[in-house]
Amino acid sequence: MGHDRVREALRVRQGLDPATKPTKVFSDKPDDLPVGPRSKSNAAKQLVSTGQKLDALQETLYAGASHRVLLVLQGMDTSGKGGTIRHACGLVNPQGLHIHSFKKPTRAELRHDFLWRVRRALPGPGMIGVFDRSHYEDVLVARVDELVPEDVWRERYNQINAFEAELTASGTAVVKCFLHISPEEQLNRLAARLQRPEKTWKYNPGDLDARAKWDDYQKAYAEALVRTDSDAAPWYVVPSDHKWYRNWAVSEILLETLQDLDLSYPEPDFDVAAELARLRS
Image (cartoon, rainbow, N blue to C red; front, side, top):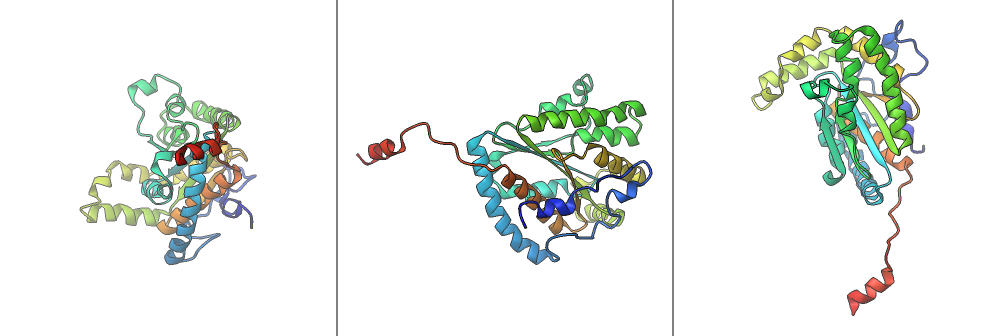
């Protein structure tokens, strides 16, 4: 079915007015699986094959050093950004990954434009960059918690679109995944963090503050996805109530993206036959 089967199925819905129909941007049932495996065991089998293809393509990307890939992971707390990095992005050689986790801006970062710290974290040639949260925090948290006036965060949609257009024009493939979970599943995952001693370090009391604003965040995500989705820098809504499906879907999106780059190994800048002769002499 070509290289875009999963991306087509998970691409954010187009042509909607998020101000009046925010719930239609993505399903209110994150356990609906529009494409792909229907069981954990089948997903695991497919992930083996996908991993082999991803590994080969990532090596070609790294060797050629003519393209970059930026994978943006956004989602509510417990949606699985870290797990996605471990299980989907972990299928490739870690030498070719540049992972950056965005926390609350520091004082130094706040003295600059909101995109300043993002530019400093971009992947280099031949690398796959992964953002655990991103510049989208500045139209999500900044909006919901009223950290800046409305006219400021609304203008940021335009700034983000211009920034991502600049990235794609310079050879960076931008892929954005919204890890979509239900409030019921988030509750289960937060409870698990408190009930399992090896998981308590992941729990943050502030997560409940964000959870209390669930509807506000869903509206903020809906508008951000519609306002900043483009063919050059698309958004994909990844159902993430099932961790195995989330990992499968992101790995497939990444695979289809790399396949589209039509990668090839660089031609050697030396005489291969002569070097073989030298080795055998």
